[in-house]
Image (cartoon, rainbow over all chains, first blue to last red; front, top):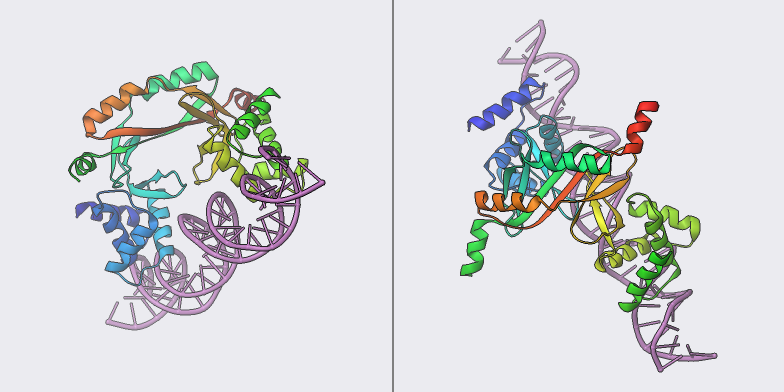
Length: 145
Length: 145
DNA sequence: CTTCTAAATGAAAATGATTATCATTATCAT
DNA sequence: ATGATAATGATAATCATTTTCATTTAGAAG
């Protein structure tokens, strides 16, 4: 787990202490094949370290987000999931069946934004794009089951 | 306010009763230059009809959304704003200074989705696109103030 | 290896948005 | 006018997230 070491170094560089709960939370994030909700991280975390608290999960996620190590996925009901951040501006593709989340590049959105700016007079500063669908595994499950 | 009459007809067609709170809420939605949060509708509503309750605002919004008359705007913190829906699949452009919300067509997103489907193996069923920026008025305010 | 101090933790309570409950009220078909 | 029932509003419940605060602990300094 060099990735774990990398995150720990970044925390250290930013004056954070390396605690057991933080290690656990980071491991969970790095080993998960999909985005997780804070309560899911909490439940998984308690299996590895029963003393861990939900508040600590929230605080750690806040710190990790601050350092750009994780990013949020927005859900319909307003709650958030988190997953390790990827380089550059990426967008999420969320499987509505199993929650697996993939990223894709949206390089060619620039043209759309320019057009929107021209048509509306707005200056576009930020954007949010998330796709929802069915991942290959779940497509197969559906066929077979 | 023929738009108001139109909404009332749709409510009637769907077996809903036309009540004073509903009239008030619909008027507020149709007259607002920007998307509103439920509590904002509640506050505005109490000015016109002091007896109105926040719960009624939520229930009325739920009904109006069900009938396709309003649409939600997602916010960073997970809370929602609502505004009258427009025909077809539209996307929102939200002014981060004043909250004014404009819609734009995203017709050409189809090509992007096809490419993503090919690259990821996912089947894309739904999407969310929201842009954030500065509207023409707020760009000017910033220059002058 | 101890000591110290600020950072981090965890339990519990607070918050804020949204939803459920339920007795009362009001719409509208009859 | 009247009655069935949809809608309302006050209150309480939920659920995710944040705050508070006393206690613990990482890690720098001695």
